[in-house]
Figure 1 (cartoon, chains in turn purple, red):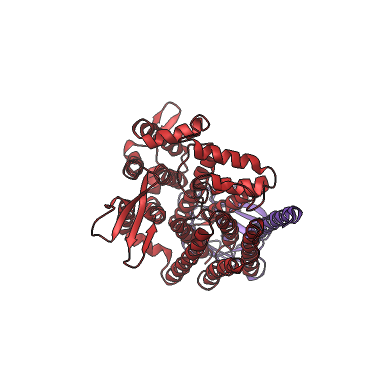
Figure 2 (cartoon, rainbow over the protein chains, first blue to last red):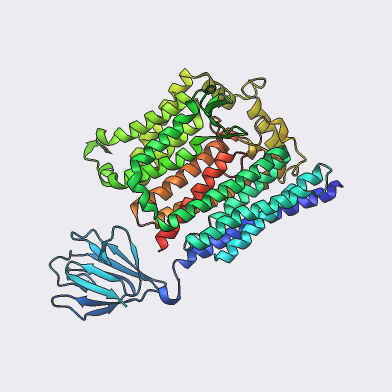
Length: 138
Length: 431
């Protein structure tokens, strides 16, 4: 086997290895990108409606950027709920995805009945509970 | 990435493996033979099988796990074929067995979720300990399961089946079980381990009793070191535990204390064991001990040194001069024959797998799954770092395999199960 052909084949082999790695890297990048803009039915809404509350049922607001919810007058959305903390949670809407994070509240934030400890992605129809107030993502 | 892309990439890896074997044959003056087609078919059967199992039983799993593993296996098969065609044939059988076991595991967890394992926590611990102790069985006698000593370490088990014998390293499976046990243990103790009421100067210190499990695992890994004279397995066991403690609590103090304990244990081992002294000699000054302990490391350096940018070509270098080139030193053989480009490709594939593994852990909401994914990735990453570092003379050599690349059936089985578990975890997190 002439040496030239062997050298060429070796370089082709290495090129194929790198083509493979490039494809995997691209696929991983696309995979990571998918998480943010899933599209279709799993896309979260950015409107939040209070569905159960002593005094605020029916209150609706849209989340654009970051919205802080709590009992304080300085919160973006003020809750009249004695179990809510001054600054209870933060909703962030980014590229069509809605995320909720608890701001160290005393009584916790519940998504679909489960207390969250880390920032959690919300989807259309998820129930968000703070104290006695229940909100729904639409 | 869609499943279809994943399937395409896996086929690509099979083509690469067959291409590599062809290059070896051409370099040896031979021509195309059945081995080339066989390599392609075996790669396709093994990874295609796991791929189909994931499609069926874990459809939401991350699909970035299999392709890098397939690339590493392909490069490994080509290089093992170059060094020892008989062993490459054996390795292909092991590849099929490993894939079969991974498929079986995915099938089992399709009906019983991974959480079920937590109920059998103590059984897991007992099983792992039994597996770790197995190689200490007498190497001759009436029992059909015998311990076996190789290269100064006692970590092999030989099963006498009458007609034929089977050898494997139970430690490769034990490390996965240990991770599952630790994950379920730490998932329950997370908060108490993260508390640090004591303050000394600017440092918050954990309570002494919180350090108890740390010391216990440290003692267990020292036990492995003493009983089996295996530096690699004991470092891996302890490192994985420290990594998982850090993941569970987010306290860097555990990394510091763990590092100190590891260095202390290593130093004590250096004072007590001859084989550790030889390893350190070979690490610090391989050329002064060229005739003895340093021979392997020195030959690996010569090999890697001649590799240059694109290597000598598969089958055209002399990696056969390095003792154990197909197991511990496979990276040196690849670096010689595929050069800098080839070795960077191997490292890139490992980096991808580790990144995907930690990504799965980061996205997991459930504590047990998060810790399991993180622990498995720690084991995988540490093993890769230890053996690559050993070959490159950054750390003393520890006799462990390079995952997916090295020749070795038990290692292949262990790593396939590891990737299968990661796939299962990522599936359960999505649903």
